[in-house]
Length: 183
Image (tube, rainbow, N blue to C red; front, side, top):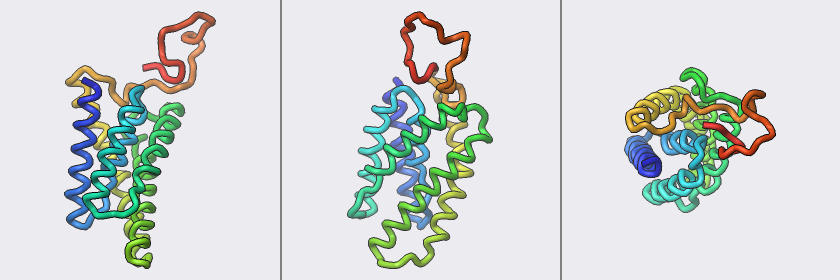
């Protein structure tokens, strides 16, 4: 069920990103979705699905260079780091990674725009709008995705534990758990 939820949520993010992109707005919804699902244990599957959907979105835009192949693995690493810091608890704490994901998406959009048109005209507006969209939309996305995941009895982003080991949890015995993160 987790894999179906991941594919469905990333497809919705990709479809909404295309709808906003056709209207002229650079909203990095697929990148935000990839950051969200990159923090879970099944990050490899989410990365594969995100790369496939990201390449489809970039082909729909007619881009010659699929930057999602570089950006999405980077976002997966950043989401693992954010989880390790314990930053998944609390909806207001999600504004910071949303802004950084938006900045990454905006800079990638400016690089693609420069490659296609040869100018950086309006590039700073694109980066600022993308960062502002990530700042506002990522906490909203976390709330909606966590609500739906709760209905389906799946792991929720805001309930993931950090990667720091607690003294009471880590002992010399073998545990049948993921050693990096404990859900």
